[in-house]
Length: 157
Image 1 (cartoon, helix red, strand yellow):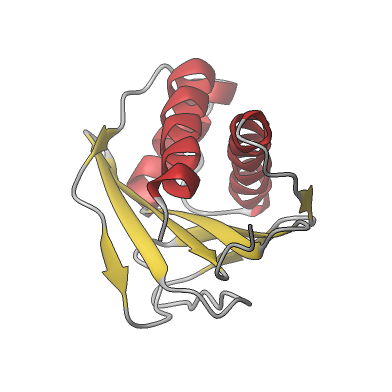
Image 2: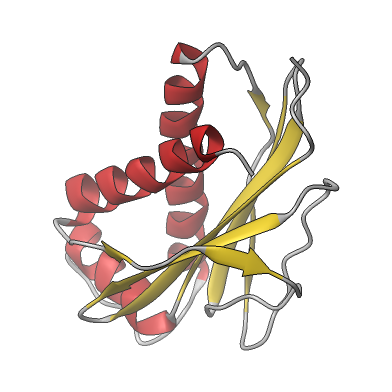
């Protein structure tokens, strides 16, 4: 997959989390993902369609990190993943995709975004609706890890 598509999502996630939660996410090494099992406890998934390609983006948070982000953003830390946490993950998914969409538009790629879907629970799955490879990028923070997944069909020129 083209780095031109991956980097806007990476920088957008780091920017959103540092701005909204004053939390630093440290990126680790990206790799190809071969299964549909989420690497976190709560995930946001959003589809994108444009004239050149279609794809999807997901972000998964381990419970500890999701609760820490919630605490830093709203000043209260829930006991576990609840409706407020899943709403927050949906909103983060929207903000990250919106930021990446803006960066991709500067490179000439235009997209429409769907409404994000949020799934939670141990061992839940994420199904990308495009044929391209799934790039997974882990991030770590003091309170847990996050993983983003990016999957696009082959880009038409």
